[in-house]
Image (cartoon, rainbow, N blue to C red):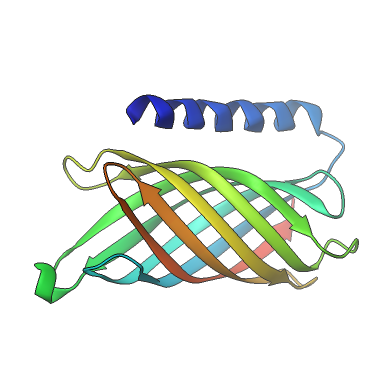
Length: 166
Protein backbone atom coordinates (compact mmCIF):
# COMPACT_ATOMS: atom_id res chain seq x y z
CA UNK A 1 0.00 0.00 0.00
CA UNK A 2 2.88 2.37 0.69
CA UNK A 3 4.02 2.17 -2.95
CA UNK A 4 0.56 3.13 -4.21
CA UNK A 5 0.41 6.06 -1.79
CA UNK A 6 3.83 7.27 -2.92
CA UNK A 7 2.75 7.06 -6.56
CA UNK A 8 -0.39 9.09 -5.83
CA UNK A 9 1.54 11.72 -3.85
CA UNK A 10 4.14 11.99 -6.63
CA UNK A 11 1.39 12.29 -9.26
CA UNK A 12 -0.25 15.08 -7.27
CA UNK A 13 3.06 16.93 -7.06
CA UNK A 14 3.60 16.57 -10.83
CA UNK A 15 0.11 17.90 -11.57
CA UNK A 16 0.69 20.84 -9.23
CA UNK A 17 4.05 21.60 -10.85
CA UNK A 18 2.51 21.38 -14.33
CA UNK A 19 -0.21 23.86 -13.48
CA UNK A 20 2.11 26.32 -11.72
CA UNK A 21 4.35 26.46 -14.79
CA UNK A 22 1.71 26.31 -17.55
CA UNK A 23 -1.30 28.18 -16.19
CA UNK A 24 0.38 31.51 -15.46
CA UNK A 25 -2.27 33.55 -17.26
CA UNK A 26 -5.12 31.86 -15.37
CA UNK A 27 -6.45 33.06 -12.03
CA UNK A 28 -5.88 31.34 -8.70
CA UNK A 29 -7.80 31.28 -5.45
CA UNK A 30 -6.92 30.46 -1.86
CA UNK A 31 -9.53 29.10 0.52
CA UNK A 32 -9.56 28.33 4.23
CA UNK A 33 -12.13 25.80 5.41
CA UNK A 34 -13.59 24.14 8.48
CA UNK A 35 -14.64 20.47 8.25
CA UNK A 36 -17.24 18.97 10.61
CA UNK A 37 -18.59 15.47 10.26
CA UNK A 38 -19.46 12.09 11.70
CA UNK A 39 -17.38 8.96 11.36
CA UNK A 40 -18.92 6.37 9.06
CA UNK A 41 -17.05 3.39 10.51
CA UNK A 42 -18.04 1.56 13.69
CA UNK A 43 -16.51 3.15 16.79
CA UNK A 44 -15.83 6.61 15.34
CA UNK A 45 -17.75 9.71 16.40
CA UNK A 46 -17.23 13.39 15.72
CA UNK A 47 -14.63 14.49 13.17
CA UNK A 48 -13.29 18.06 13.29
CA UNK A 49 -10.72 19.55 10.98
CA UNK A 50 -9.53 22.40 8.86
CA UNK A 51 -7.84 22.84 5.51
CA UNK A 52 -6.24 25.24 3.08
CA UNK A 53 -7.07 24.92 -0.61
CA UNK A 54 -5.05 26.45 -3.44
CA UNK A 55 -7.13 26.42 -6.61
CA UNK A 56 -6.01 26.89 -10.24
CA UNK A 57 -8.91 28.16 -12.34
CA UNK A 58 -8.46 26.59 -15.77
CA UNK A 59 -11.56 28.45 -16.97
CA UNK A 60 -14.79 29.72 -15.36
CA UNK A 61 -16.19 26.21 -14.95
CA UNK A 62 -13.15 24.01 -14.26
CA UNK A 63 -10.63 24.33 -11.44
CA UNK A 64 -7.79 22.16 -10.15
CA UNK A 65 -7.67 22.32 -6.33
CA UNK A 66 -4.74 21.26 -4.15
CA UNK A 67 -5.85 20.79 -0.55
CA UNK A 68 -3.94 20.11 2.67
CA UNK A 69 -5.29 20.09 6.20
CA UNK A 70 -5.81 18.22 9.44
CA UNK A 71 -8.72 16.05 10.61
CA UNK A 72 -9.19 14.73 14.15
CA UNK A 73 -11.28 11.56 14.55
CA UNK A 74 -12.79 10.95 18.00
CA UNK A 75 -13.19 7.35 19.11
CA UNK A 76 -16.36 6.53 21.05
CA UNK A 77 -15.90 5.68 24.74
CA UNK A 78 -17.44 2.25 24.23
CA UNK A 79 -14.52 1.51 21.84
CA UNK A 80 -11.74 2.74 24.14
CA UNK A 81 -12.10 6.50 23.74
CA UNK A 82 -9.41 8.90 22.60
CA UNK A 83 -8.73 10.33 19.19
CA UNK A 84 -6.27 10.34 16.34
CA UNK A 85 -5.30 12.75 13.59
CA UNK A 86 -4.74 12.57 9.86
CA UNK A 87 -3.09 15.11 7.56
CA UNK A 88 -4.71 14.73 4.12
CA UNK A 89 -2.94 16.11 1.02
CA UNK A 90 -5.14 15.94 -2.08
CA UNK A 91 -5.43 17.11 -5.68
CA UNK A 92 -8.59 17.02 -7.74
CA UNK A 93 -11.02 18.59 -10.16
CA UNK A 94 -13.83 21.04 -9.35
CA UNK A 95 -16.54 21.63 -11.95
CA UNK A 96 -19.06 24.49 -11.71
CA UNK A 97 -22.42 23.71 -13.34
CA UNK A 98 -22.80 27.40 -14.31
CA UNK A 99 -20.35 29.28 -16.54
CA UNK A 100 -20.23 32.19 -14.05
CA UNK A 101 -17.49 30.61 -11.89
CA UNK A 102 -19.84 30.51 -8.89
CA UNK A 103 -22.90 28.53 -7.87
CA UNK A 104 -23.33 24.76 -7.63
CA UNK A 105 -20.36 22.49 -8.26
CA UNK A 106 -19.08 18.93 -8.05
CA UNK A 107 -15.64 18.10 -6.68
CA UNK A 108 -13.50 14.95 -6.65
CA UNK A 109 -10.10 14.71 -4.92
CA UNK A 110 -7.49 11.97 -4.45
CA UNK A 111 -4.30 11.92 -2.41
CA UNK A 112 -2.50 10.66 0.66
CA UNK A 113 -3.37 10.86 4.37
CA UNK A 114 -0.52 10.90 6.85
CA UNK A 115 -1.44 9.58 10.31
CA UNK A 116 -0.18 11.67 13.21
CA UNK A 117 -0.26 8.93 15.86
CA UNK A 118 2.69 6.59 16.31
CA UNK A 119 2.53 3.71 13.83
CA UNK A 120 -0.46 5.17 11.94
CA UNK A 121 1.23 5.12 8.53
CA UNK A 122 -0.01 6.60 5.27
CA UNK A 123 -3.42 6.05 3.67
CA UNK A 124 -4.95 6.51 0.24
CA UNK A 125 -7.52 9.37 0.47
CA UNK A 126 -10.54 9.95 -1.75
CA UNK A 127 -13.07 12.73 -1.30
CA UNK A 128 -16.15 13.44 -3.46
CA UNK A 129 -18.26 16.54 -2.68
CA UNK A 130 -21.10 18.66 -3.94
CA UNK A 131 -21.34 22.28 -2.95
CA UNK A 132 -22.27 25.86 -3.59
CA UNK A 133 -19.88 28.77 -3.91
CA UNK A 134 -21.12 32.35 -3.64
CA UNK A 135 -19.44 35.20 -5.51
CA UNK A 136 -18.57 36.86 -2.16
CA UNK A 137 -16.17 34.00 -1.34
CA UNK A 138 -18.31 31.82 0.93
CA UNK A 139 -18.38 28.12 0.07
CA UNK A 140 -20.50 25.34 1.58
CA UNK A 141 -20.11 21.68 0.58
CA UNK A 142 -21.43 18.28 1.62
CA UNK A 143 -18.59 15.78 1.40
CA UNK A 144 -17.36 12.30 2.14
CA UNK A 145 -13.72 11.63 2.89
CA UNK A 146 -12.43 8.07 2.96
CA UNK A 147 -9.07 6.66 4.04
CA UNK A 148 -7.82 3.21 3.02
CA UNK A 149 -4.81 1.54 4.66
CA UNK A 150 -5.22 -2.07 5.79
CA UNK A 151 -8.88 -1.30 6.38
CA UNK A 152 -11.06 1.66 5.71
CA UNK A 153 -12.41 4.62 7.70
CA UNK A 154 -14.10 7.82 6.67
CA UNK A 155 -16.49 10.58 7.53
CA UNK A 156 -19.50 12.33 6.04
CA UNK A 157 -19.77 16.00 6.77
CA UNK A 158 -19.75 19.59 5.64
CA UNK A 159 -17.02 22.03 4.71
CA UNK A 160 -17.61 25.73 5.34
CA UNK A 161 -14.94 27.89 3.74
CA UNK A 162 -13.99 31.37 2.66
CA UNK A 163 -12.01 31.83 -0.54
CA UNK A 164 -10.43 34.83 -2.20
CA UNK A 165 -8.64 35.54 -5.48
CA UNK A 166 -4.88 35.88 -5.52
